[in-house]
Length: 220
Image (cartoon, rainbow, N blue to C red; front, top):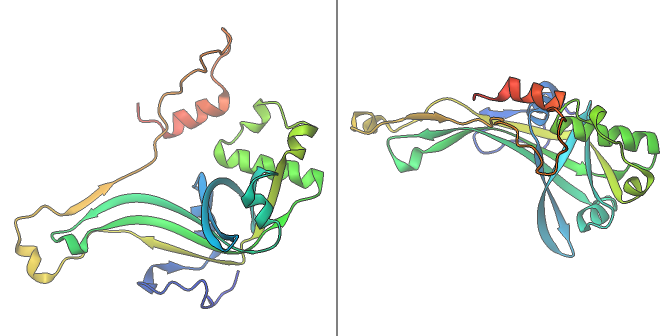
């Protein structure tokens, strides 16, 4: 990752919110579940949401070997991967100054297909851990047919930037005298009570990975 951001990754709108250090970028990526992948398909733009996982400076994406995104991305075309967390609604005294608190990352690069079987399985585990840590060890692993039907791609996180907005509203000086409530409504993603599969056999207790998620993130 570059110390001085180049033109492609530099945050232009309110540049003080831009961050380019690995720690900030990695933390935002690691806290997410879904990324959006932007690319050009047959001369028109597409943005596809998908799961992902990170290991060190590598981002992994997976999908059906027949999907247009996987088929296009493995050709080495330019792509843009984004992850965003919405942390709050920022409500000002005027409509113009309403905003949102957020953390976002944009990664530019090219994807390459993972051909090595061991790395492919490791990459799929990394994506699984991104969704729910510990789940991979509780379930049946992919068989040969499933591995063949799945494409795993990797992207080096060399051209990336983060943008963070936090804090309260910034109103015009004259508007502070208005009788209008202003402030921040915090938002967060919260794990709720797990729901059993309707066909789950009797006597099977809740998975340890889910218990840990529920205990950590649930409020009820």
